[in-house]
Length: 130
Image 1 (cartoon, helix red, strand yellow):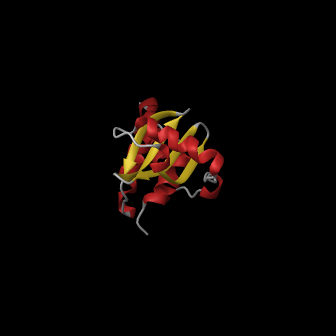
Image 2 (spheres, helix red, strand yellow; image 1 turned 180 degrees about the vertical axis):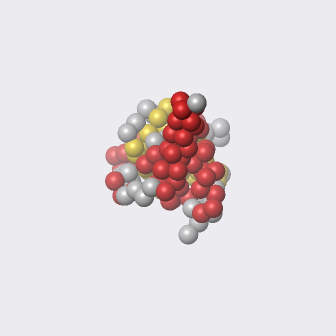
Image 3 (cartoon, rainbow, N blue to C red; image 1 turned 90 degrees about the vertical axis):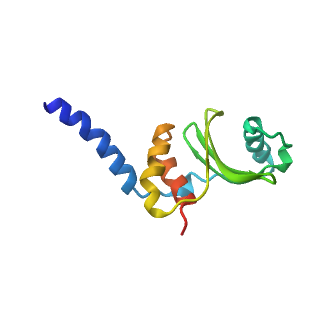
């Protein structure tokens, strides 16, 4: 019985811990410059269903945590999205902004793609409507 209690408690603790943590996101924000911008554009270009040239992909922000990248990008023909990559492999894309009370849904989604906790927090801070 004690093992079952611990089994259910620890995942719940992890979710609560992520939900209430404060993170310094400045450490995760990468500077976008001429040298790395084309790299980020290329990652996004590879997974778009509508083919566009890399110079038509606007990369507005990049968050990096360990082997993960969250690339905030848009094109003239698409809604802005946050493209998640792990080891340069596409994982998933998030579209749209959220209200503060939608944080549990965002956390559930990021846990589903196994994104690191710090990246999850900073991603949420960027997409929440202030």
